[in-house]
Amino acid sequence: MSVTTLDPRTALVVIDLQRGIVGLPTAHPADEIVTRSAQLAAAFRERELPVVLVNVAGLAPGRNEGPGMSGALPDDWTLLVDGLDRQPGDITVTKKQWGAFHGTSLDMELRRLGVTQIVLAGISTSIGVESTARAAYDSGYHVTVAVDAVTDTDADAHAHAVGKIFPRLGETGSTAEITALLPAA
Image (cartoon, rainbow, N blue to C red; front, top):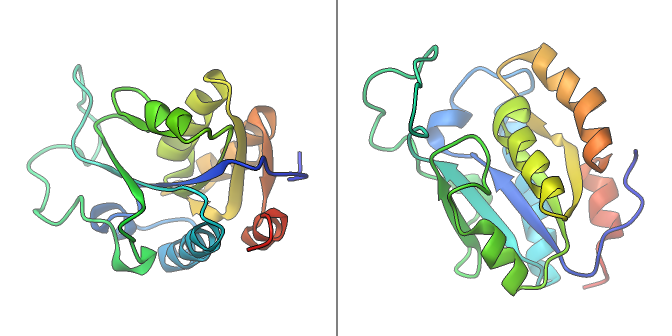
């Protein structure tokens, strides 16, 4: 479903726009995803709405033998990219699993702020973004995904999440459509 409205207390949640992930080959250029995510973040900040910047630092416990996940990660792998223009009022969340809710303080932080809806952006569409969208939906948040501010290392997985999964969890829209629905600054 195309985006129709945003709740008065909507938060932007940006997933894994960090040096180690933005540097991976993606279906859509990562620099464009960073630019659109930064545009959303600036619009949310201008309206004094919460901006959450999420990074991933490691793996969840259990069996984790997956492609590309062996060995030590580079020291700067978890650092958020400069293009997000991180501000002192932004909420930062570090996760060790795909989604940003389980095992983190995200739900508590959002509820303390009275947030009822989240807008999602980031990488990877079918992993971190989709897992966070599912958990948000399960937790009772209204979910909107900025479909031009997400990408994946797998083009088919990206298309499946955007075309099949996200419309079942909430609404989708472009950065411009979402920004246009934000309350006046």
